[in-house]
Image 1 (cartoon, rainbow, N blue to C red):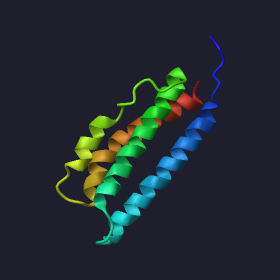
Image 2 (image 1 turned 135 degrees about the horizontal axis):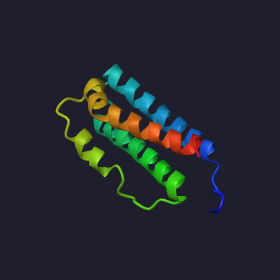
Image 3 (image 1 turned 180 degrees about the horizontal axis):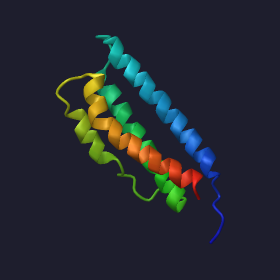
Image 4 (image 1 turned 120 degrees about the horizontal axis):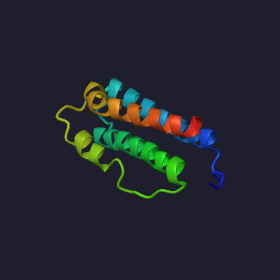
Length: 111
């Protein structure tokens, strides 16, 4: 087996840092309840954060992105929420996100 061209712990740290930063920004925007803030953009950011983790998993496993549709199922779940609150987004999004992020961590730090 050829050695990975990726520094996997660095790959994880880079992706996870960006994703965590985006999620914290969205959370703070939801909690401020600023009427000028677009909650659609916030939900979209959460969805894209999960996709980044999915792409990172693919890079760690195969050294390339093979499925650009990964994470698309979460988009529908987030966009169809009835209330625009952090609590509701968190309830739908966070357990899946954390499970996938933990999987990504183990792929990058346990090889």
